[in-house]
Structures are given as structure tokens and as C-alpha cells.
Length: 187
Image (cartoon, rainbow, N blue to C red; front, side, top):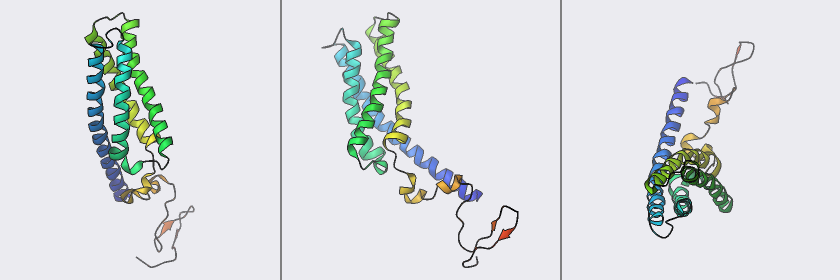
């Protein structure tokens, strides 16, 4: 039991860190898209609209992020209903964009910061906070097909169940402390 539990936990941790690495790679590219576009807009066409520039850059990065996460990071967890998945993704990203734009707006209007580079950095800080929120929201709300669909993690729910389903012929302790043999081949 302990060996099985340990192997399952290691497998789940490995899967989790692979997803984190892919999510990080997608996020890195989205970060460049978001901040490159935002920086360009803040110092060009949207000079006096830093929060709008942040919103536009984040929106373009969001579309890229959905495509990359859907077809690479969480490809085994894609929902069958693409419209629902995209809607949930947009909702989660709306919250993330609100966080990063909010950091920029708070720095400008709440703290009176007028330096464009400081406003840009406030948005970057907001992106970092929003990234943590996004990862867990994507993982558990958007791309959330059960782990049982992945063969190496089938039956992981048994780890946390009180009474796992034993193999035939295996002795299982009963509530009264007695062992009872189940029908089936003997081990």
C-alpha cells in the first residue's frame, strides 16, 4: 500500500511539474507578447492610456495562450465542449487581465505614479500575481478532464478512498478486526 501510494504520488508530482514547465513556457511567450505590445503601445499610439495599453497587450496574449495551452500544455485535459472551455478560459483571463491592469491603474491613479517605466513594472507585478491564479484556475476549472483518462493515473482515486477495491483472493481486514478471504485465485 505504501509503495503504491508513493509511486502514485511521484507520478502525480511528475505530471504536475511537466504541466507547470509547459505552462511556464507558454506563459513566457505570452509574457513577451503582452509586455512587448504593451510597451510599444505605452510609448507610441496609447501614450496617455497606460491601463488600456496593458489591457490590449494582455488580450492579444490571452488568445495566444488559449491556443498554446489547449493544444500543448493541457492537450490531454481538453474539454469536449470547445465553446465552454474557451468561455471559461476567457473568464479566468478576464480576472487575470483585471489583476494586471488593476496593478497599473492603482499605481497611476491610487499612488500617483506618472513614470511610464514604473507603471510598466506595476503591470508586470500584476502579471506575476495573475499567473499563479491562472495556472490553478486552468488546471482545475478550464482544462479539467479527470486524471482517470490518463492510463498511468487510472484509479488514483483509490489512494484517498477509505475502502479501496481489492484484487480477488486478497485478504482484507473487516471492521471487527477479522480477516476474510475474498473469492478468486490465491496469490
